[in-house]
Image (cartoon, rainbow, N blue to C red; front, side):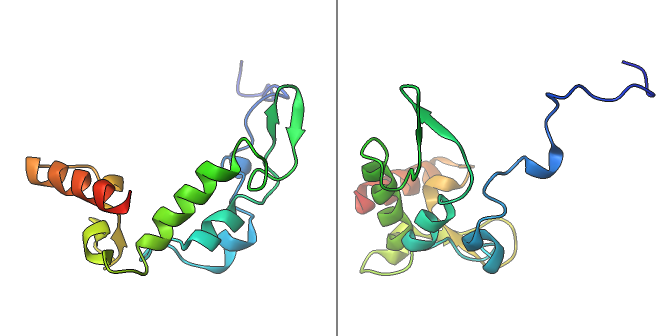
Amino acid sequence: MTTTESAPETALDPTKVNPAADCEANRTTNFASRPMTGDEYIESLRDDREIWLHGERVEDVTTHPAFRNPIRMTARLYDSMHTGEHVDKVTTPTDTGNGGVTMPFFKAPTSSDDLLKERDAIATWA
């Protein structure tokens, strides 16, 4: 393709790389310093994404029987980082320098201690 030719119709639209970017939950809150809550996570999945299962479009992935339970479990994970007696075990400071927190399992380990923290966080949450 030369510089004067246009991209084919199937080219990825760089403004739509993240289909959830326009979701209300993602527009109104800055998650840079804190993880989403479970409700915010579920709401972020209610957007214009297309999910197809066995040839049929899934209208709402959050309520469909094939997806609702794993989504609810992930929402529980997000909620555990905000409330409950084990918040300190299931959160760790991010390495971005913004003062935020994340789950140890979501952060790349740099030592064997980090791996143990990941294991303990998952065991505590489960």
